[in-house]
Length: 165
Picture 1: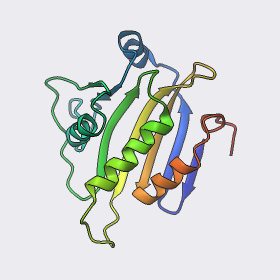
Picture 2 (picture 1 turned 30 degrees about the vertical axis):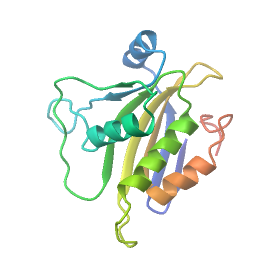
Picture 3 (picture 1 turned 90 degrees about the vertical axis):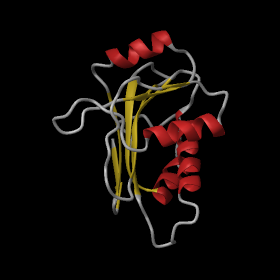
Picture 4 (picture 1 turned 180 degrees about the vertical axis):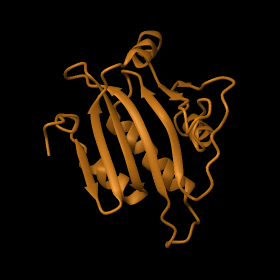
């Protein structure tokens, strides 16, 4: 399923090979994991804003366990865009609550910026639907306002239904 509005892209699709995610779920029943990804031809690394987002989460949600990779390079990208790493959600963290946390992070991160500054956020989240047990990947690219709109229209019963338009 893909939703596009102007310069915003939101996709949700079923993951066929979710073995890494299933390994995470079998080891952790709480919290979130920030996952390194390959960028270009280089070794996997944590996207640019991963460390800052993890610090913010630890401050804003101290009860939320956060799993970070060890000895992983950080992918440095120039520009004002916010690049969050791939996130795995354990069963105790709902997608809607997590997206609200991301929206709050973006709000805090951009306090004091000029109103004309509209950096884009790039986000990928793997989540297991409680309704059918299928692993889905939510991908979003757009500005903070578009993410806020996506969170507001989030319907847990239909959002992950790829046949819904």
